[in-house]
Length: 319
Image (cartoon, rainbow, N blue to C red; front, top):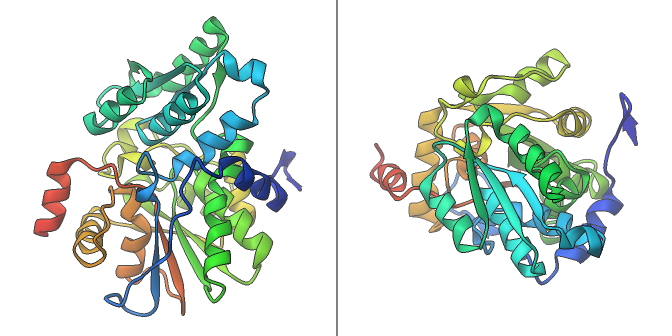
């Protein structure tokens, strides 16, 4: 299917990805939340080997490469979770991995990438995509972007496959939105299997590029200085033309949450569900708790749990 000349991935692409990532990514459960208003389930992607959903797209992208190209190694740019995921996928296939990171990225995520064997290259935030492209060209490595890639999007879409298979009665699926890979893939899978189910994206108010763009009917871009204000570091990068096209066609809308709602949700999830969520991972639950998303049977995707201990303590204390 094409919109404005951009070819969108299909349900078949997501189903193919499901086969590739088997035995690499965890099929995460759905957790019922009797403590929440209405009927809410969590999809805890923090239980993945690297603590986030990103492993799905990274593994699919690496395993989909021809063996000769894969052997040259892979490179990406990431604030942390995609970098860890690609490092995990590369180590599993025994190939080199380089991750270009923005200066000031969370230490906990950098440490995770190094433990998985990745070479770390810090650069100013605005230069990370350019720097990754330069390394790919100079070293002959394959560039695997965090979200602007069909195989990455298809891999992330396996979240949606599992939700529909495990909870046939769901009527609303809520997903965090940053670059848009998770939302694009999840919406593709859910709508492909159950067109009647609503798929809603969630962004911080301080990094609401997709919400603004969908409202205007065009891709918009915010500066790193502007999006850098949100505590949700995993969604400070906005969508690409590819992911925006998917979300414009397949999402039922995008809502925004405040910084206070994000931190509050982190604390609630930890205390009531015993699930550790990073700020980006708490976005979907924040939207539900604040009443921005309604549904009879809601699934909120907790996209990741790699959180700074100081911030987690603040969330638990309710400050």
